[in-house]
Length: 389
Image (cartoon, rainbow, N blue to C red; front, side, top):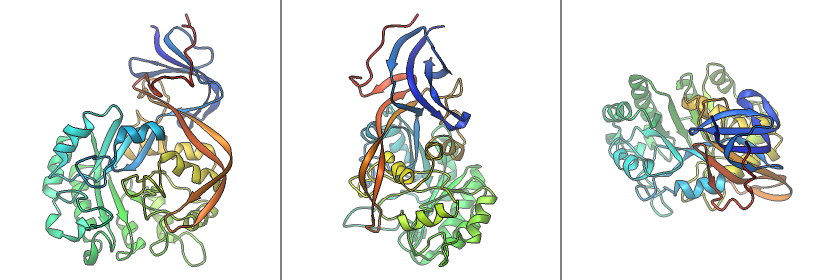
């Protein structure tokens, strides 16, 4: 059977299969068909020699309910520039407004959008430069019954339950919203993603409550509520949480990633499980910018490229319990991201204003969605080769 598309001669990096070599990737019927040398018999062949080809990048923490919430950005615009093929919206919508998110954004999007459903009835509803309302501070908005109903009815696109706790999100109620969200997650049999900001509650209190498969986002946030102690060592409760299967996600955003924290954690050999941008209207023009910039920061801090790619492909797919994503295994989702790494002097900034000069930067150059070339639409960087027979 002929292939629909072959990406020819790129450096294929697929951590799910320990692949890192120059080879071809073929797609057919919207799925990955094969990875191998000298593949032929395709309707379309693209020359990607000199580029890196990875499974479609997954950004585990985004806010893409554009027009429905004040923090939402346009998923397709973001994904084109960031090489993301699956954007995970983390709690923009709650059970009270998820139907609109699904109908008007998720179902109309060419890129794949999955979601963690907020335990708060209206999701994150008061988030701007001038209005900042912690939705978890209002306990009357906690909606576990409705959240279970909506999550159960939308299992094709809802991957878990989201809650935000901390002084800025739950105020005097501390970890109480987390307890409610955990009950809902248990009832519907889904993972939970927990946001953490300033104490209370403490980092320790939060991670002690999380179950295997749950995700702590903003895991490398600055002091206070950082994951390391005054001696620069990873807190024991954090190591214990990882040992039992809790996953640690970056969730960069506007206020949740510090180079100081990252340096301490990497020095201890504690890499993030997943790297995500937490892109929204208040950080898309800095300090987060996009997914590839967030990945670049870790590459420049010494995290091996294969681990950086894994943190936005196979590891993210594991967190989502979607093994068909983040891999080039035959039969998996037919998504791919084409990247370059350029050498130079690049300025990076974290959420507390610290600047770091990095010697390299990852750039998104092209995207394949569902086995079809998607971006750039003109394909000028990647000329079509003569049809291989």
